[in-house]
Structure formats: structure tokens, C-alpha cells
Length: 298
Image 1 (cartoon, rainbow, N blue to C red):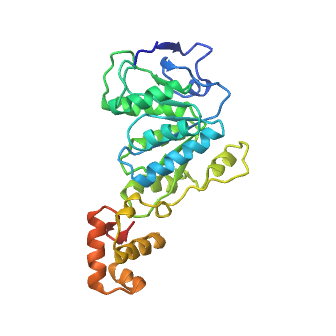
Image 2: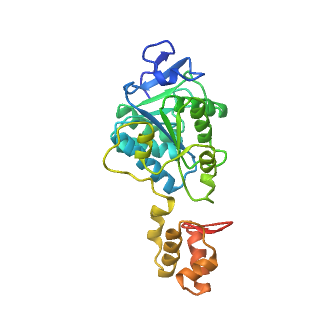
Image 3: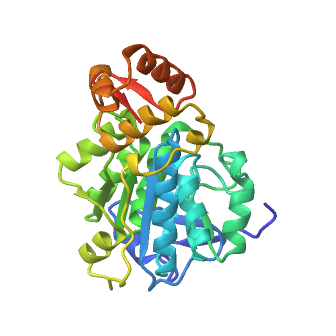
């Protein structure tokens, strides 16, 4: 990345005002690109690195919708949900800020260097509190997360397992007096255990981008974008299903939206037990469905 790195100190008039309000703001921010207009609303979209295809789709669509409304999307450039959030903002022709946990002389992860270039090309920014030459260390990700939430009026969590770093971002947001929104998912899916705990602890369950705008008292557009459940998003792997019985089992699970036992699947599909068992075995091998303690889910 052969771009000039600028540095803004805490007492500089260009220092982001929301970030200045937190209890432990970075004394300096190093910047590639240009920070968006201070008057623009900024919302963080974060989640697990090991995201499902459906989770990344949701993150991308939410970020795109926010960008289309001229809201700046902030995330951490990590793989998974963060990457999808930045991509969505770019699809919406909007600005996005990536906050790194290392010096700006090297993009981390390296796989996202092209994405970083696109962010800069589209009037976005890549920032870090760490000086050039600082390597990526584990504790710095947690420190970095306070900046992601601190820049923003709200944080949206998508797919947070029990030990996800995005839970730290949510906790920082709460400490900073900012709103936390959570996109819900299947009850038994491990990627949503942390998400659902946040909801139990008082985070706002969100069903549409308009829910967020309404809570933040921002202007609500006419057209609604609903945040779909995982079961409502078609799995691209179903294109590989050629057997009608396998397709029937898949559609039955998708429509149920909750785990089904094999007996229930047999009852709903009216197929022979042997045929259902064979269909389930193939669908699991192809990673189209998965088995949980409560039954099978899409």
C-alpha cells in the first residue's frame, strides 16, 4: 500500500468527535485515505470470521442498504462478516472505514489487500492507532474493537459465537453509551449463541434496517429491507441437488425454520424411512444441512 499515512492527534480539530467522547480514546489515529464527513452517521457491522454463507449475505445486504442511505459502514477488515460488510458498503456506492489492529504499512489479513485498495479508491479510510511497523498481536484486536464502536452511533452484530471478538465490540459499545443491534438466527446454531446472549442481556433484536434508523431517530425511507432469517436465504449448494427426494427433505427443513427430528421429516415428507435416511446422509456430506442435538437444520 503505497499511500501517504496521515496522523491526527486527540487535540486536533479533525479528530472524530464521537471517538473523542469515549473513556479511553487513542491519543493518535493513523489514516490511509480520508475520513468521511464528520456529519455523516456511522454504523459498525461486525461478526465472526468463520461466518456462514447466509450470515455473509445478510451482512453484505445490510451494509449495502446503509451505504445507499449515505451512512458510513465501519468494520475491522477481518475475514467473514467484516469483509462482507465492507463489500456491501462498496456495492452501495458508499464510504466505509476499516480499523486495523496493526500498523498501516501492512494490511491484515493479507487476503484483503485488494479490498483495502477498493475502500481507498471509493473515498473510504483505513485507520489504526498503532504506528508503522507494529505487528498484529492478539490483545490488539480487543483494543481495536473499542475504536470500531467508538466511531459509531450504533453497532450491528451478525453471527457472534460464544467467544467471538464481536462480543467485545458490543461490550465496548454498551460502555460507550452506544446502541447495540443484533440480527437473530437459528436457536441451535453455534454462530448465534453469543448473539442471542446479547439479546437476552438487553441488546435490540433487529428485523430491518428501518428498525435501526427508527431507534436512532434517523429518517426512515419508504422501502423496507427486511433482514431475512437464515432459512429464508437460498443455499447456493442446492443447485447440486438433482434427486427429488433430497430436494423435498431440504425444502421441508428450510420451511420449518427449526430443527426437525428424522421422525418428523418422515411424517412431513411422507417418504419411506430408508429414503429419508439416504437423503439426509447425502445432504450432510454436501454441507447443505447439518445435524444438531435437537435434529436437522438447514
